[in-house]
Image 1 (tube, helix red, strand yellow):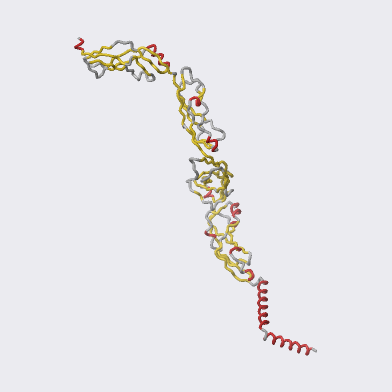
Image 2 (image 1 turned 90 degrees about the vertical axis):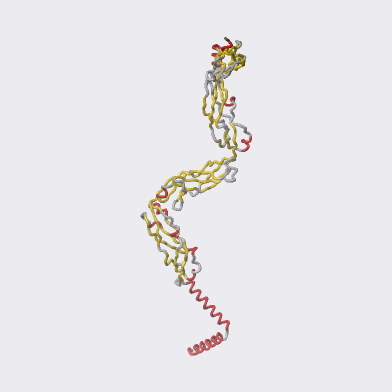
Length: 429
């Protein structure tokens, strides 16, 4: 029985080989089956691996918060040291094509740093496919120093825009200050923080987000590479309104109130500046022609004085270039006129000549401050007739008054001239 079975298997094997050796299709099918079987073995067996190099990677810093908690901070820009890292991977054959720069992360763990100064910090790498065999370079050299932090107020600065026609104002900053942290040597140089707001072509109020700039005590910008802040941007509300220059009324009735001392009056007022620039809605500005001030009280005043006064601005004004002006109120005695007598004196009579004149009834109308006019009405006016440079003959000479004696008065003589004759002394004898 056994021999029969063996004989049958031999006949089957010879028949199968004969069929296979003479059939090309079966040969190809066998080859395909062999390839598929080998692929299955390779992909299903993780122990079959290949090496793969990933170059040009950039490392990132990790655990910087732990470094800061240890009161340390990076003191130099690490960007250059973190570039061009190479990693060698051992990757399963099935994942070889998937392993690339997108799924390899290289980090520098700062939590291992415990002291300031120059430190060698190890690079670490991870991948989703296979395992990391080596990293080149293995370490990076970084500088560290003491960690510092300070609160810095934010200031706003307007740039651009048409300042001759429009008014711009930063009405709100949120936040109003930022906390800046980093290496002590850099933090100590911070003088202020500025938000630069460009209002070019803006014609209406708006809100925007802007970044801030740190400035040192010499006005130079401080790079923020090594610094961290409590906020990366600032919300800025900007008011934008048209402007117009408006004159301030200098009409006495608009400027003063009250009554000066008896016998005195307000003769004029002057205001500096004479105009101001106002920002408001365009419709409101179009309806204004001038501004008024809060009246100056002159009650009982008897001399010129100056004082500050507020402009009576409307509540809808968004801005006014100045809210106060200087007002000078000129106060003088009430002026009056009166007739009085004239005492003539002839001066500078030429040598060898005598004068004779018609002894008319001379009088003068005096105009000026009431007190001075009243005094001269009682005493009369001292006047003179100047004969210098004359020769013999007849003349009509003007009556003159010494202006230094009567600086605030005006005189009208009647008659205005003196008719006189100059003769040689010898002919008179």
